[in-house]
Length: 157
Image 1 (cartoon, rainbow, N blue to C red):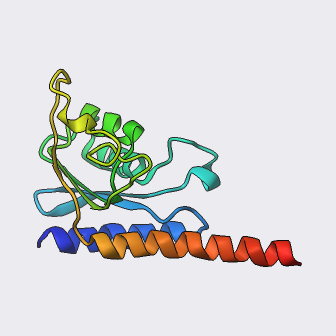
Image 2 (cartoon, helix red, strand yellow):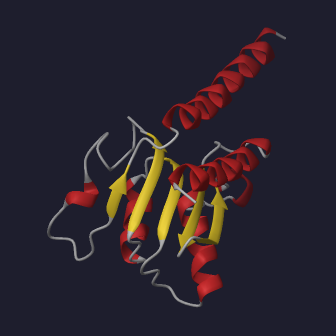
């Protein structure tokens, strides 16, 4: 199985978030070719500002593996991580992050800054961006276009 296969699994999680009215971002954690954690955005439904896809997938993997450290694990996420998620990724000792679409507003791999490249931090995670980027970006842009359309229709009534 390759990175695209696992990114499609993360996209499946993103679709689940979108169906619940959440921003469609999904993530999975993989260890030795096996999915050990899944998550999607749910801050609205959970009334939890930390309920990002990455955090949910990390929590699920940690429970499933019985360890708050996730060495050797890879995190696949449909959107470039934010600062909060990057911190959790580093604290959990994820070996590699693979993301789809860049996030020009809050992304901390290269879009706004590169938090993962700060040498003083005690853990360094390999980052790969752009896997199924167009598909991931289209899911997000379609979601926001629909929200704008619905808001406009509601305002017209």
